[in-house]
Length: 148
Image 1 (tube, rainbow, N blue to C red):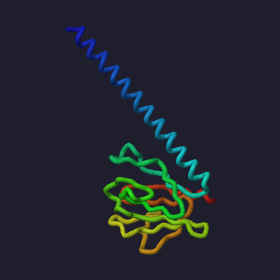
Image 2 (cartoon, rainbow, N blue to C red):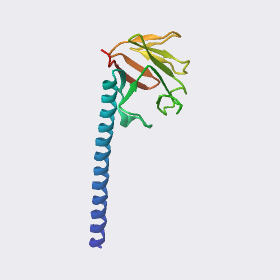
Image 3 (cartoon, rainbow, N blue to C red):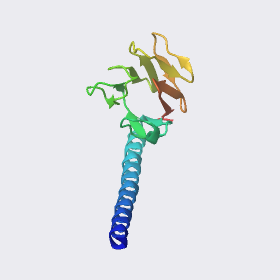
Image 4 (tube, rainbow, N blue to C red):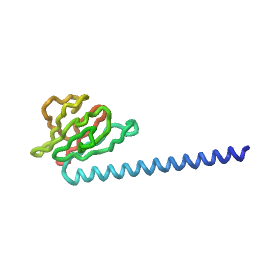
């Protein structure tokens, strides 16, 4: 009887160790891929969005950072440049544009709104500055201007 219990405990421990190793490898992989994405954005001289939320608290896939180019649409549709399958995002939620060496953000008629530094955007584009906090639904990002 003790031999069976001992074997079960041994196998459970081995499985727990494998799950732990898998989790660590996955976290390292995600950090490396996010670092590559940020360095590409910085090398190209554009900006990027850096996630403020903790990913483990979200029940959908989201990256730590997203590159922003001349005309970047963010939303829940797979056709968007930045696709995030978040139920609080509209299909085409917001657009970030780069015009005359400046970034601008505009809400595309989203249901839950787009906020910059806690203020809801109106119908006109608003200029983004380095370190602005942008909120889409329940997601918050820090805007990093790579042109500065």
